[in-house]
Structure formats: structure tokens, C-alpha cells
Amino acid sequence: MRFLTAGESHGQKLVGIIEGLPAGMKISKAYIDKALGKRQQGPGRGGRMAIEQDEVQLVSGVRGGLSTGAPIALEILNRDWENWEKIMTWRDEADVESRKVLTPRPGHADLTGSLKYRTEVRNILERASARETAMRVATGNIARQMLDSLGVEIRGHVRGVGGVHAKFTDEAAYWQHVEQSEWSVGDPLAEEQMEKQLILAREQGESLGGILEVQVHHLPAGLGSHVQWDRKLDGKIAQAVLSVQAIKGISFGLGFEAGDRMGSKVHDPICYAVGKGFSRASNNAGGIEGGMTNGEPIILQAVMKPIPTLYQPLDTVHLDTKEVVKASVERSDVCAVPAALVVLEHVVAWVIAEAVMDKFAADSFIELENAWQEYQAYLRQK
Ligand SMILES: Cc1cc2nc3c(=O)[nH]c(=O)nc-3n(C[C@H](O)[C@H](O)[C@H](O)COP(=O)(O)O)c2cc1C
Ligand SMILES: C=C(O[C@@H]1CC(C(=O)O)=C[C@@H](OP(=O)(O)O)[C@H]1O)C(=O)O
Image (cartoon, rainbow, N blue to C red; front, side, top):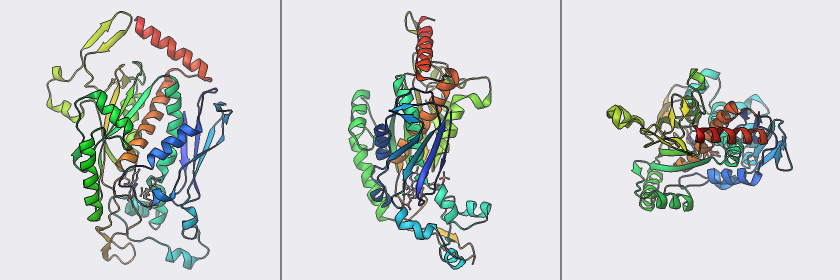
């Protein structure tokens, strides 16, 4: 399976192409649109989200709500295009000159992109922008629908924003709150403090990042492989997660704490029950050993740095005059941690679906489902 995206943040539309999905898989546009809507939510988002109302168009590869096996083409329109058409298109050299952005923002792709591609900053920021993640949610959601049909569940929650961390003691109550909460925190007190932190950041022209957690439940042991570096599932998930704008780190299970403990306090004892097969007494590994799922839930955490655009900008250097000036201020989010969580859930869904298709390669969904069930039965009886 593979996919590509195209489109600028303020261009006409985002475009995606998916290839390699089995035929006969149920695909719901409404389900994709719901995820797109969720990606737009959360306190801390800027003015752009009041303009956009993301909706996917399934242009090809789906008939009567089922995949045909042909490439699936997707589109998401940028409503903001009508406000940017003049800036995004030009007629003469004078126009180009007046539209150049020459004051790169620290933390964004602006400076290095403009040096590398020998161009002004707008040509860089338009594609570096996390607007692109709308399409990654749409493509990932199609993968997620495949996983849903196989009984795999993906959950995500915001663990922290700007140094305020969510706490929980009761797993069931926690997840109930996550379900109800608009932005998946699961700790009402922390949510309140995070919102206060956001108000403060906004008032001070600042920005915030945070910590996110994604869990994948009901996976069999044996997705991914130990045999080659580029087939290891933890490596593939890390690549996908770190490719999301502003995500700077990832850990599985115990994460960095594993480095502080003795081996016996880290590794998960192996258990066996007749009719259920092998399992683990704990899940410090976060569901992956040797680059393969081990049958426990995948649990990963990721860190998002604060948004680079600051309304009280840092110093930068003007690309032409070389004067020290303030960095440019594009309309911006103050915090996009809840939005990034939706993106992470979907990029992880893609990688897991890819691993499922690697193991159970199938042209039609019924073949995939049969192979999946047969393997699960084998694991239970082993
Ligand atoms: C959902 C989401 C929304 C974002 N919104 C903004 C924003 O409004 N302003 C901004 O400067 N950066 C924003 N970012 C972060 C930048 O896109 C990102 O920092 C930039 O592309 C540089 O890439 P890097 O941080 O991965 O190095 C956002 C990121 C995500 C995931
Ligand atoms: C458009 C989205 O996020 C954008 C990501 C982004 C950036 O620099 O990454 C900058 C902002 O763009 P604008 O200046 O148009 O408001 C965000 O709004 C989106 O998430 O759909």
C-alpha cells in the first residue's frame, strides 16, 4: 500500500492518491469527514479553522461505498483559496517582488527551505504547513476503516499541554471522559488548567506544544518483522509519527524510563492460557518487540514542540538586506496539540494497515478477513 499527497496550504485544494487497498472494502465518506472535523477542533486553533469546513471528495476507486481495488483519488477543497488567489498566483515580475516573504520564522521550514530551494519563503511555507495533515487524516482514515472492519481499535489522548499533565487513576472513567471531551484529555481538572495555560500563552503572543498518546488495541502478535531494518514496525511507526509537522520525539511503552530500571522491572513476563494462547503480565514494551507486535496493545507517546509562529516574534535576519528584524507573523494557531493527536491516530492507522497487508496480502477484503481470522485462530490454539 502507498499514498502520496499534494497541495499548498493556500492553494485550491489538497489531493491524495492511495494505491494497494483490497477490493470490496466498505468506505464511508461520512466517517472520513467526521475525522476531518475533529482535526479542526480544540482550543488554541487560529482563525483559519473558522474558514475551513473540511470535507473529502472521493474522486475514484470507490463505487457504491465499496473499494474497487483501483487507486483511490481524494480531494479536500481549501475554502481560504478565494482570499489567497491573488497572492498565490502572479501575473508579472513586479507582482512576484511584492509578494515575497523574506523574514523567516525560527522553528518553521522557512529559512532552510528557502536556502535549499533557492526561493523566497512563501514557496516553502505553503507546503511545509500542517494544512497537508488534513489529507493525511483522510488517507489514514481509509486505512482506519479497514482496521475497524477487522476489529482493531485506535485510541488517542492528550497527555499534556504546555507543562500541564493529565492524571488518571481509573482507566474506565478516564476513557469515558476522553470519549465525551472535545479534545481527548480525560482529566477535567487538567483540561481546565491547560485551557488557562492557553489563554496566558495567547495573551503573551506565545505558543504551546504538548505530549500525545496513541494506543492500538486488538492486534495479533506478528505484524512487522525482525529480519530487516526497514521492516521493523516500531521504526515504521516512528517514521510516520516524526513526519508530522512539529512532532519531535516518540517513545513506546515505558519509553525513556526503561533506561533507568533493572531488566526485571522492564521486560514483560510471558503467560499462557489454553484456548487464548500467549500473553504478557505487563506491557512495558508498548506492544512491540523485535520490530513485531507481541499481541499486547501498541502504546506510544509523542512530543509536539510549541508552534513556531509567535505573535511576539523572535529575531530573524532579512534574507535580502541581512538586517536583524522580527520574524514574520502569519495568521497562526497558538496550540494545535489536539489536532495533532487526530493526525497521529491516522498516520499510525496507515502504518498498521500497511503491516496487515504485508502479512495478509489480499486483492479482496474477504480474502483479507479470512486470512486474518485463520491466523487469530492459530494464535489462540498455539
Ligand atoms: C495540526 C498542526 C497545526 C499547526 N499549525 C501551525 C500554525 O498555525 N503555525 C505554525 O507556525 N506552525 C504550525 N504547525 C507546526 C508547523 O507546521 C511545523 O512546525 C513546521 O512545518 C516545521 O516543521 P517541524 O516543526 O516538523 O520541523 C502546526 C502543526 C500541526 C501538526
Ligand atoms: C490550515 C491548517 O493549519 C495551518 C498550519 C500552519 C502551519 O504553518 O503549519 C499555519 C496556519 O495556516 P494559516 O496561516 O493559513 O492559518 C494553520 O492554520 C490546518 O490545520 O488545516
